[in-house]
Image 1 (cartoon, rainbow, N blue to C red):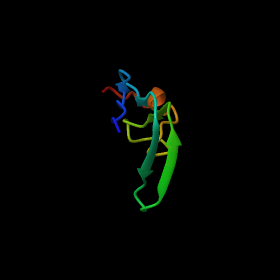
Image 2: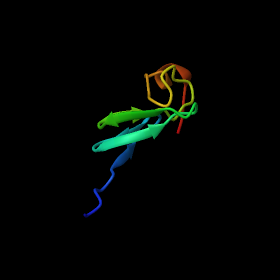
Image 3: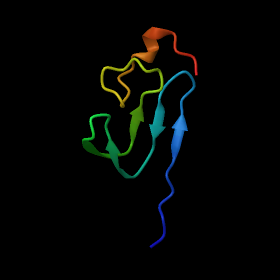
Image 4: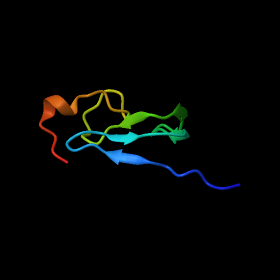
Length: 64
């Protein structure tokens, strides 16, 4: 079975956009969250939906 290519795009001063695929993400409390792309992962550290982006970077002056 060939591995699918994972495509993640870093948005300037914004989140990491996971563009396609099905994923399992282990949260800090050990629970597993199943998610299908596309979705955005927080890079600013201020999201109330971590590890997912909620757009907070727009109000924090995040540069990255």
